[in-house]
Image (cartoon, rainbow, N blue to C red):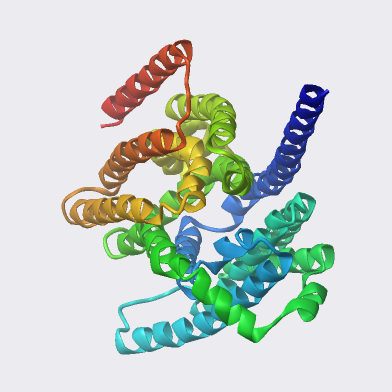
Amino acid sequence: MIDRIRITLDKLQQSNITRHVVTLGLGSFVSQLIPIVASLILSRIYSPKAYGDWGIFVSYTGILIVLVSGKYELAILRPSRKVGALNLVVLSTLLAFTGSFCFFLLLYLLCFLMPEIIIPGLNYLPLYVFMTCLIQIYNGYANRTEQYDAIARSSISRSLSQAGSRIILGGLRYESGLIIGALLGTIAGIWSFVKKIHIIRDIRRSFSFRYMCKLAHVYRYFPFFQMPSALLNSLSTNLPLILMAFYFNKDQIGCFSMAITLLYLPVTLISNSLGQIFYKKASDWPPEDTAKLAHKFLKLTFPIGLAMSLFLIWGGEHLLGFLLGNLWSTTGLYAAYLSPWIWLILCFSPLGMIFDALDKQKTEMILNICLFVSRIVVIIAGGSLLAAHQTILLYGVIGTILWSLEGYIIYRLIGIRITTREKRFAFIFISIVLLSWSIKIWYTF
């Protein structure tokens, strides 16, 4: 009788996970399908230079988002009681608002003292940073309360509003249409969250300033360890594009930005959804169950990344040039150079939440330091000595090597068990991708 009850509970547990994955996956699919379709129109409305400006703007945003909230939004899952999570929501929001305003003043002063530094859309930057932080905070709270339908609806609302406003503003010849459209989309995503999860009402009932300060101390390792690690990771992702502006023209930066945007769509579509669920379960489950879940996720992401990499290597350049327009043919070449790196991110990015679940932030920080230093060296050395496409290829090679190392560490840390047959197939397919990649590089040089 007890065994039957245990089996029934296991089935219900697996059913809940499947439902959560499907809900987030479907929401992410729709929310990412919208910008894919919209990009076919936007690429003919906006020039590569406009996308270069957008890429620089969003790179500054990606760096500032990590700094302003202290990464306390990741701690929302940790308190045992709901009241603790709500007070962490308030703490993260206050830090995000204050930090966004302070960094805006610093950047404005920097641009005034050093006119050679030009930040596109500077006036919109603080509001966009704050709004994006709110999305992450509400996302964390909805994840804690398992309101995955709210996350899905918010993502769809954000994508629809962003795509529609960008097309309208582009038709009206607004040069900053990509930036303003993104801001409007973020506001729509926040409004969707507020209506669905009723967070304002719950905060009014639960907020305590003294308790909030206590929680800030209890979870201080998030700003002390997680934030520096996340900052290094964000800098290694976003600073290269900012540095490229000093070496290459806006058209090349725009093509690189478009390539990164398109490549990250499957990462956002799949990895982010899986990562949210994995972090929640890894924080609560025993190691054996966590390892089984990680194995299931790898069996999903590995073949998707394999197909995507082979497609980009052999057909991406011609297809993207056809779909986006002749001005964007270089985007397909850049995407092919970066495809193995994105494959690894797709596989191991959701499982990387294990560092937070097991309080291994120091290990993650060391890995991010290596990633940060290597990428900056590549951009500076490549910008000084090489052409743009050579620099981006080197960037992809270094990213592939370091993410292979991080993936191995994650694999060992979780304790994933892979059968001999699975290892054999993985070796064969990885060899095919690397051989195809090498042939592509040989012919393009």
